[in-house]
Length: 118
Ligand code: AMP
Image (cartoon, rainbow, N blue to C red; front, top):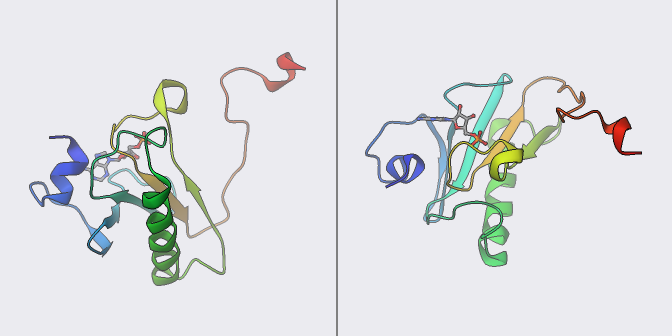
């Protein structure tokens, strides 16, 4: 069973912010901003590559509810999912990083210099 499936099953503890029958959102153990929550489907999906449109539909509503609960829907936030090796995905259970609580940086994201490709 993967790490996030264990959180879903409550086999390992997590600081849960919001939960319904299909999704759960909990605080990232290593936050990169004042608010850093991980929103996941309870049903195991490896990554965004495999997720169904139906799950994404529910996920969208869930994340919108989450950002309202956190009080960041008006001030703004970022939603990110890392996919695969280049995306930096460490946990192979689809998760959306919901990040906010302050002005977020938007520096260059790639190890390679974008200018080298133009
Ligand atoms: P990613 O690199 O996109 O796969 O993100 C995985 C995230 O999971 C990282 O931000 C980790 O800090 C976070 N993480 C790992 N273990 C736990 C845990 N037990 N509880 C909460 N967050 C975790």
